[in-house]
Length: 194
Length: 85
Image (cartoon, rainbow over all chains, first blue to last red; front, side, top):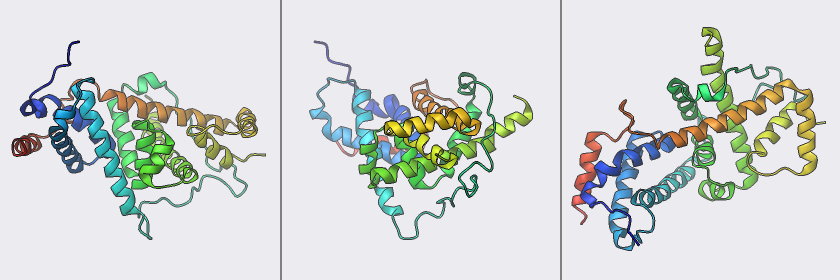
């Protein structure tokens, strides 16, 4: 059986550095924390190099290590924000419903089709900005669930919350993200007619 | 009867777990009658699609506009790799 190609560690940074960086940056949205995680990943890889079975590609192996580092990072942040005062960005209660729970200010029509939308880099810039505007707890839960695609049991362990708690957090995150996108992108694109 | 506020919460919850059948029917009935909540559901799905698209995009070739590791960081990491043989 042919073994997958293995690069010399001195070539790792040039070969995999940017890829690992983009992967982590999308999830952390913090350049210096991301650079640190990439470095930690390479160092951990260097240490465990001999036990690397070579059954997966080197990229898959490195991403596997990076994923653990990212989970650790979120775990640390979850401990930090569980201070009594919480995150100052924690949103106030939603004001879009009246006392009977009916929309008082319903969602506007977004129009267009996703295929066209997803080709617009500017849309994703706004998407990322909206995500960064959420409190850490909401942003990290959303990132783990929708970008990383983790299952809820796993996320509960990382963020140290119950499942019911996580549903509330994700509901909040989606609602706030939706509202932010509406304000920052869709209502504006309706104005400029595109 | 479920209110719009209940339905938005259940729509989100249904993206993370499967709702009991009674709840599911309640939500579907509400959506038949409520344009705002039906729109809300479409928008939640679009947001999920956008997040997945973003995750897939990182497989694309290097973005020359700067979404990469800085030269300083690369040099720092190379050095740390050399010092940990």
